[in-house]
Amino acid sequence: MKHREGTAARPVSAYGELCKLRVSLFSALSAFTGVVLAGGPLSGQAVIAVFGVFVLACGASALNQYQERGVDALMKRTGRRPIPSGRIRPLQGLFFSAALLLAGSVILSAASGPVPLLLGIFAVIWYNGIYTWLKPRTAFAAVPGALIGAIPPAMGWTAAGGSFNSRLAALCLFFFIWQVPHFWLIIMAQGSEYRKAGLASLTGIFSWRQLARITFVWIFAAAAAGLLLPLYGISLSPVARVLLVAASLWLLWTGAAMFGMSEEETAFPRVFRAVNVYVLMVMILLSFDIALA
Image (tube, rainbow, N blue to C red; front, top):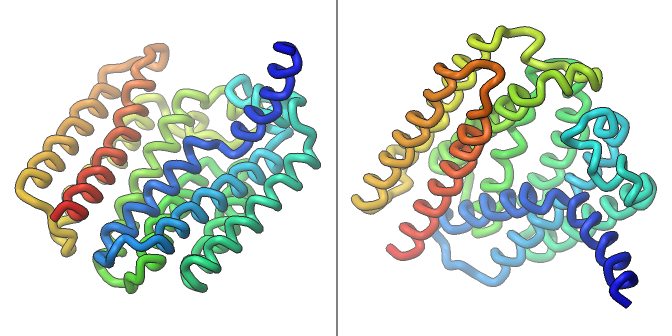
């Protein structure tokens, strides 16, 4: 019985991995931040729309793994993903992703109307079409690819009845800028694997020191974009503003550690975690401070 239960659990776990649940959950959280910042009441329809964002993100992630299954099989970091490891067959992954994309689209359409749905469709096209196509062709694919991170907050914002304005633009800009160092830190740590798999890598263009400096500039820009949010009408309490400044300074202090590192050192996980924790801290500060105001 235990053997059967373990066998049944593995496919379920594999499909969860195919969805990149952490990444998809982050998309949903950023959409929820957009819902809260839009300023309207937190309706059940808006919450359902956030769930639709999550399902759509799961579908896009699954489709991406189907698209990149050949490259994933060549890299240690991705070789254990469900399709290259053989736990899920390619066609199963493709059908699963199509079902999720359809379900997410239906949920968004029913809960929030055409604008969030059109934004979601655009995000899928940009991620699975443009960005995935650019990755093996240019080392700078992460810059246009970062646009994907700016769309879920706009989906949540418009699902809650918000209109396109400077406040939304500032929020989307923050998420866009944050995505670039997030991606580049992965590339810095896995540059040799990227090159072996035939992917364009920044480590083949810039020296170690140059790449560390450029990545820190993007980290600095992410911190600056976070600090500028209150100037665009996203009001925060004095306590929340102090915490936002403290979080931004912490991010800069942690990111500056790259200047003293050699290529062989392993401080990257710390900087990578700091970049991700920072954006979560900003979302929590914005959402809870405004919701409790």
